[in-house]
Structure formats: structure tokens, C-alpha cells
Image (tube, rainbow, N blue to C red; front, side, top):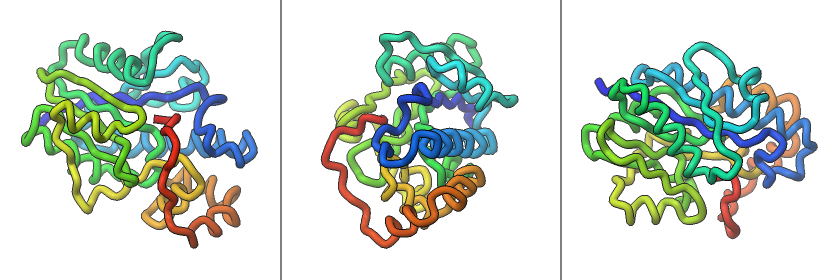
Length: 230
């Protein structure tokens, strides 16, 4: 079984999920923290994962996320998301453990350890691979074998760029939670129809019942502008 280092980027809490700006700031921040913690728990519960590396420039995340099994790497002020992920990957590989490396977004409240295990098993199929988001234009996970180039290409149209770079696209019907990222209230409603992690479920049930309930009756809206939170 291949061991994995999983790199999770976290924005400054004050800048995270600006597309949820219709929500009051405390509510939006509570949701961001809850989703990140649920992702943390799912990843740490996956039997393939040996370590989780959090890349961030916000010191608040240490107290918000700090549990055994996490390592923190500071990103530079000028780092793009992809720069930050490469920095985290370099920290993993610099430890010379020989583990494979994956990058995973922190806005996947329906993620389960079983889904992550199923996705990471594709290391036996291709040296690099990725999982697209539910919308079909973005990316939620990018992974590479221990000696393969780790080349994250997040941003607008990242699915197409990962395909052009030669990464294998992993499309499995069992990966609904791994693909359902949350950038909008409509996205959150869709995640809620799958399942929600414990912490996100508490936030939603206590703070968003009416708004999410209304959104749950709508079809998902196609994103028509850049994915600023990727």
C-alpha cells in the first residue's frame, strides 16, 4: 500500500469563500472552519494517509486545526495557490519518506475516508492523476507518485489544464463527496443532499436552515465566472 502526504491549502480566514459574501461574516467564517475540520478528519481517517500538511499564511489556523497528524508550512506572501501547494509538496518530499503526494481542497464537507482511499488507489494506474469538481471545469484533488513530478494547475479551467499536462482524470460514481466542493450556497445545498461532515452539519442545521433549504430546491447553477477560491 502506498503511503501518502496530503497537502491542504488554507486561505486567510478573513479572505476565504468571498463568494458566500451574502452570509454574515461570522457565519461564513464558521462554515469555512467547519468544512476544513471535516476535511481534516476525513483525510486523517483514510488508512493510506501518513501525514497532512497545512499550507497557510494565517497563524489562526494552527489553533483552529491543530491536532496530531498535522504539520504546518508557511506560504510566502507572493505565493499563488499553485506555488503554495508546490511549497507544501517540497516540504513533504524533503523529509525523504518516499511517500506519494496529493493536494486536496478544504471545501469538501461531504468527503469520506472511503472516497479518498478509492481515489488514491489510482496511483497504481498512472503516475499523476486528478479528480475534477462536480461542475466539471475545476479540480478538487491532484496527486503524484513519489518520484513523479507534482504539478498542480489549479485556477480557472484547471480540469482542462490537468488533462493537457497528461494527468489521468479519475471519474468514479462513488466519488460524489470528493467532487462536491462548496463555493456557493447552492453548492452547500448539493453537498447536504449527499452527506455532511459532523461539524459542517452543525453549522448548517443551526445557522443556515432556511437559506440552504430554499437552495436545496434549486438546480445547481453553472459557474459563469472565475473560481476565485480554487
